[in-house]
Image (cartoon, rainbow, N blue to C red; front, side):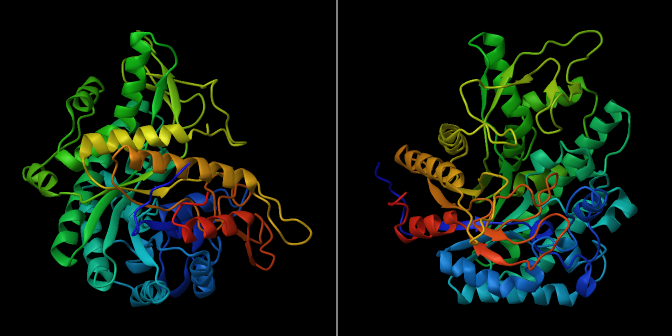
Length: 471
């Protein structure tokens, strides 16, 4: 198959601060929600205290990125490293660290693509406001964004405000929702989601105000849901699964208001968030420049009718918090036509082509993939190698799908798979690995934290070198 990637295509890879940096309390950094959640699991797996130790290995790691040929590095800043308590004094040592990273990336010819917030709200804002439940958090986020634009915006031009808001909002502990009352949890969720939209809009407008040539985007967790059968109600269920979990978020970012189907859902559950005068103007004024999307798998759904015991819109968690069933809408199903990874994600390159076409046709904005990858329990051989042909096969199929989408007329900016190196997985620690670079540690033994190039490193190096012609 011929591929057709543009000359300026941003071949890269991704990471996030709490999963890669370590140094969790060094040089003035505050604790985050992600730290707090990881510490609760410290007896079961690795936590964020050391992670991949990028905080102490950043120069060596960027040298490896350069060796692999990366044109871009998509990473996140830690809000609590820059403003330890979320809305107080700025920590100059945090600014200095990211300046060193950004400057060295640019010296090596690597474009920094920066995410402001990737699951790691400063924990002080939880204690002060219960985080995003309070609208003050939206303005704290705007202030943090402005600090970042003023510190780095002369060199960083591509910004993503919030990583996977539409997925994060579904996971209670990432949002510090601990009530046993399901309705109250959904009320809090809806209010938090709304305040994140408000903070996102404020940060988009600040980017355009402060960063010359600055480009702003959300980074959404994309979904592509197939109907279990061709029954009309199953087809509708598949659409509603996508609309209620992803599309409502994109429509809010682009149109500045909830779409009708989502407002209907909020009214059905009696959880319409409180909105203040002037919010609508802010939300509608924030114009995003591109769409960053994360894609790992597709889903399958059947219709799940509501009944007296299960009112419309209520949720049930049979598998995980992300792929919940919703009465009156959809039930998560297994797609018998797809193979799954050892961790259950159904592998589907065609789904990526579908998503890219759908988002481009609907929103008419350039697209960049900021996460896509295969998590596996990689093994280090006795001779110090990692043979991850399964990862190469996964990435090859998805890169071909991007090429096909380009043929379909989709405007693609770049591809930054997850992840540049092995990093902390929220629920599998260092057992589940995604990286091109193996980190020589396990959950309870730091070993030498050595960096070892996997087979996929050399394969991706050649993909980049040939601009996608040699897969």
